[in-house]
Amino acid sequence: QVHLVESGGGLVQAGGSLRLSCAASGRTFMRYAMAWFRQPPGKEREFVAGISWAGDDTYYTDSVKGRFTVSRDNAKDTLSLQMNSLKPEDTAVYYCAGTLATAVVVKTVNGYRYWGQGTQVTVSS
Image (cartoon, rainbow, N blue to C red):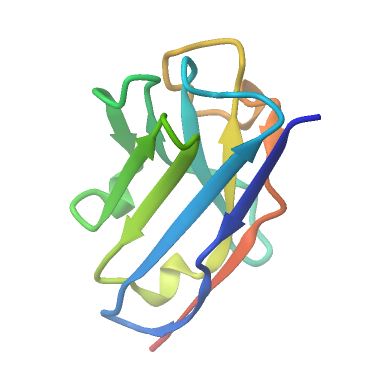
C-alpha cells in the first residue's frame, strides 16, 4: 500500500519561512514526477510546484515563483517544499502528490493518483 505523509506545516507570520516534507512508503516514486498542491479555505485544490523524476525540471505556479523551491531526494524517497517570504494568501492545506504513470510534471489534480493527508499552513498578517 502506498503512503505519502506530509510534515512541517504550522503557523507563521508574514515574511517568514516554512519547510514542508513528504515521505513516501510502500512504493518508490523515484522514477516519476511528484508535486505539491494546496487548497485554500473555500477554494479548489490548486497546483503549487512540481518536479520531474530526476529533479532537473521544476515548475511553479506564478504566485510562488521566486519564493518557493521544490526538491526531492530519490535515495530517501522524499519530497520537500521550501517556502520563503510567506504571505497570508499562502494560507492553505498543502498536499503532496505522486504518480506512477509519468516522469513529467502534470499540473492538474487528475494527474496524480496518490495523495498525502495534507498539512495546514497558516500565515498571519
